[in-house]
Length: 416
Image (cartoon, rainbow, N blue to C red; front, top):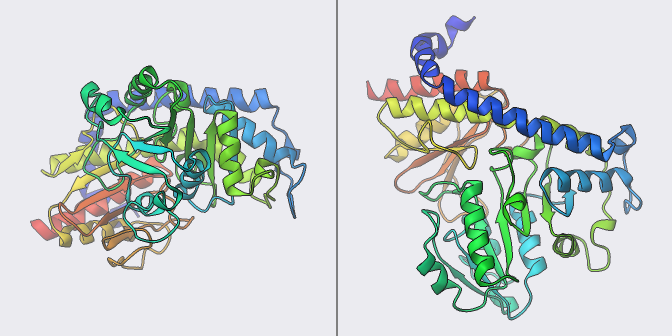
C-alpha cells in the first residue's frame, strides 16, 4: 500500500534528512517528557476524578469540574488562576476579552511585537473603521517591533508615556518575523517592569504552548491567553479558549466574557469537559509530534532551495513553519497538496477567498477533524508577496511525514 504514496518515492531522501536531525528530535523527546511530567503532576495535585467530566446545564452553577479545570490550567501554566471555556469562539476572542477586560478608558496599550495579526488588529480597531475598537473606548495605542531582540532605546522611547498594558504576540501570525521564545518574553517583561512596575504584561500565547519547558507566566507575564484548538487542546478539544494569569486580571477577563458580577461563576460546559481534560493531558505529546513534523519540513524545503523560517535546528517559540514560495501559483499548489494529503476533505480543492478579519484573500488547507484546528496538520497563507505558506500542527509525526512527501511531489512536478 505504501508504494501508492509519494512517500515511497522520496523515502530515501526523507530518511537521510531524518538521520541528520536525530539530535534535534532527541531534544524534542526530552522536552515532551519534561512537559508531560508537569501536566501529570498538575492532574495529580488537583485530584482530577470522573466527576470532573459530568455535564453541566443551564447557568452552570456549582460546576466543580469546571472549577477544577480552571485550577488545572493555572497550575500547568504557572499562574494564580485560569479561565477555560467553550464559550470562547477563538483565540482572538479570548485575547480580546483579556485586553478589553483589563483596559479602561484613558489607558494606553503598547504592542512590543509590531502590528498584531489581522483578526486581532480588526478586533482592536487598528485596521477597521467599525465601532467597538480601542478608539471608541478612549484607549490609545502605540507599537514598536522588538521581535529581533531587546532594544533598550526603542523600549525607552515607546514607554516614555505611561502604558497600562503591554502586548506581546508570541507567534508570527502572517508577518515575516521569528516567533518569540520564553527567553525573549522574559527579557521584555523584565525590561518593562523595571521601568514601569505596575504595567500589565499580556502575552498572546497561541501556537506556543508546550513548545518549551515553561510558559510565559513562569517568565513574568501577568496575563496569557490562547485557543484550545491549537496546542493545549491536544487535538481533542472541539473549540474554546483559555486565559491564565493573576487572579484579579483573569476575573476581569471573565467579566468581559460573561458579565460583571457573574465572571467565572457561570457557563454550562455541556459534554466537553472530558475532552478538555484529556486534550490537555495529551498536549505535550501532540505538540512534540507537530514539532518533529515542522523540523522535517524546514529541512526538506531548505534542501529544495526555499527560504524557511525557522531553520531546522533553530530554537522554536511555536509550532509554525514558514516557507516562502515566491509566487501565488506555488502557494496555491502547496496548500492544495496539503489538503489532498489530509484525512478529512482530501477530495476538495482549496481556493483563495476573502475571510472574516483579514484584508487579503486567504488560501487555507485544513482537512481537519475539528474545523480550523491548527493543532492538526494544516497550511494557509495570504495572497500577498512574498507568498509564504504557513505550515503548522500535526496530530502524528507519521502523518506529517506522509503529507510532506505529497507536497514535495507536487512542487517537483511543477518545477522539474
